[in-house]
Image 1: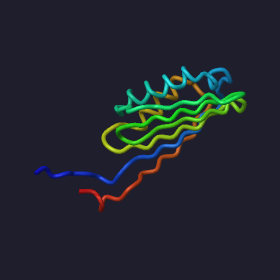
Image 2: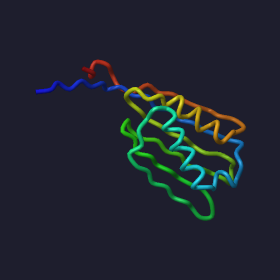
Image 3: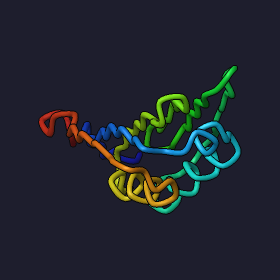
Image 4: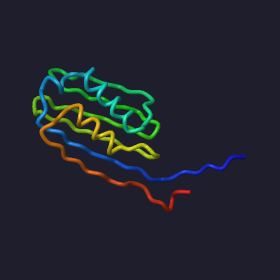
Length: 123
């Protein structure tokens, strides 16, 4: 019989990227690849993804991770996008955001990091 060891801890990062190009924020294939490549660069495991191109503009991409999830939602008409990632385990969500930012080169980035969970529930 095996013993399970788990931690009830995770890192949630929210990003707001502004000063971005309209066409790039409306380019679903570019954004999807950029997010997935950034996730891999941060050591997380992609299980699947779903994307939607909105009319007249905008893109949302959701990525299911072994470690939890990541998403982006763009506002090309405003030159910005929202980024969200929650992970547990040994991957590096801060590196995932950094890799994503480097692919888009925004004018500015605002980020918030929340450490979630409680060690008393961890084994």
